[in-house]
Structure formats: C-alpha cells, structure tokens
Length: 194
Image 1: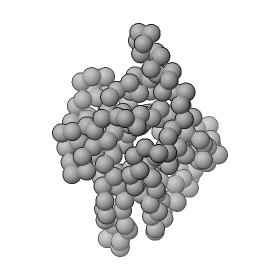
Image 2: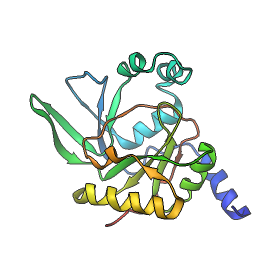
Image 3: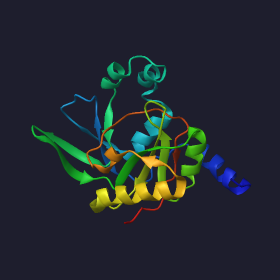
C-alpha cells in the first residue's frame, strides 16, 4: 500500500465506531438455544464488538478451551434482519439491509482487515469469534439477499482472491458474537447493488 492508503487505514483504525450512523435492526439471541429474539441496532452490535462486551466469554474459546461447550453459551446474532421465532422456525419480519460474510484467504488477518477496510463496500470488518477468520459487513438491497451474496462472493474472489462462507447466502445465517478492538467501520460505505 502507498502512504496515502496507510494513512487512510490508520484513520479508520483510530476512530471508535459511531453509534449515530445507520440504525438498522438485527436479531440478537442470548444463546443458540434461546426461544426469544431481541431487536438490536447493527451499530450498537458493532460497538459492542469493539468495546469488548463479550470479551470474557470469548477468551476461553480463543485460548483453546473446549470450543463446542463454550460456543453453546455464546449469544448469537442474525445480521441480515429482524426475525420472530415460531414453532416451525424463524420468520423474517424485516431485512436489515446488511449481509455479514466470513472471508478466508488472508494469511495475515490484520493485513486482510486493512485491505478490506479500504474497500468502498465495507461497512465494517472484524475478527470472528474464533479469531481465525474475518467477517465483513456490507450494505445490500434488502430485496436481493441471495443475489447480493453471489455477486459479493465473486467480487471478493476476483478482487482479493479470498473465499466466502457459503452459509452466508442464507438470510437466516446466525453468527456468534465476537470481540475485536480493531474493528474498522465505515458508515459512508456504498451499498453493493446487484
């Protein structure tokens, strides 16, 4: 990267995530077994990732303690919308206008985070719960979730040579909460239109 790009990354990393940007609603569940969901602002969720609300819960997982047992106690979120729970599964009430995608292919996660932070479509990028992959959050048209996933997957592979998790194509995709003080956010990110 050139000096200008390095300066942009430093500026992004030195700024705390703003809670006054795009107030879209996602679903928060207290655990994987929760029978109720709680509406949550996407920006509040990102702020909590950065400020370490779930840090104590994540440290044992990142230190190699039994992952399955520890993960089952973690809260989960559905970034792509607000859902209600019914006996036959989840029902989407409203799409959030966001998709979160786990990306793999960066040998150095910090460098990968810097690269993705400069992408015009990156609303936020952070380490996932295990700290072994990155999650990138992108604004998308609410009506085209699966098409957006497919187009973004091709975009990331073509531009950066990275692979996305196929389960991210589903609007109901859950992810464990995480902790990353180096989360980078760009509230001015462009909507990825398909």
